[in-house]
Image (cartoon, rainbow, N blue to C red; front, side, top):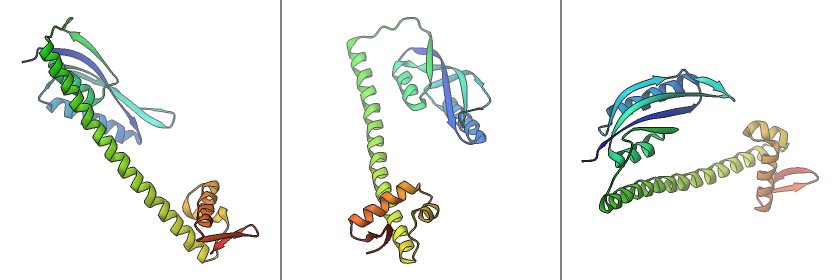
Amino acid sequence: MEDPIRIRAIIEIVGKPKEHVEEKLKEYIEQIKVDSNLTMLGEKIEEAVEKEGVWTTFAEIEVIVKGITNLVGFCIDYMPSSIDILKPDKFNFDGRYFNQFTNDILTKLHSIDMLVKQANSQNAVLRKNLATLIKNHLMVMLKFGVADPEKLSKSTGLDVEEVKRFLDGLVKEKRAKFENGAYSLA
């Protein structure tokens, strides 16, 4: 069994709206309280404040963690802004323990890497589908005679320059044409 480690940690949440940010921090704290590898000793939650258009709040918590492996797990799972190890003052481990500890860290990092790769893959599919939707919308609008990039910008919610980029892409694909300063279906 690993020796317990007493820490003080700062858990921070940023987002919108204020109520959501405060609720998410409370949920995070509740998750920590029921984590079997942690024992919550105390918490101090600050009220959310607005900074640069987003709300931010944080909690200072004091926790006992069941060993160094679980400390690393705490840091990866709960992503504290900072931690301060209160006890013990020193750590001693043999080579075999340090080897296991390092492999545990690598396992967690590989799991995170897999999640990031899955999210990136899903993001690429979503971006491609969104581009197709925008092109289809623009083609429908062109079919109904709406060819002014300003009006198309309002109907898509995109910046005028972004609309022009999509229209130019449709011209390159020979699905639209640009003649006499106006776009139309090909």
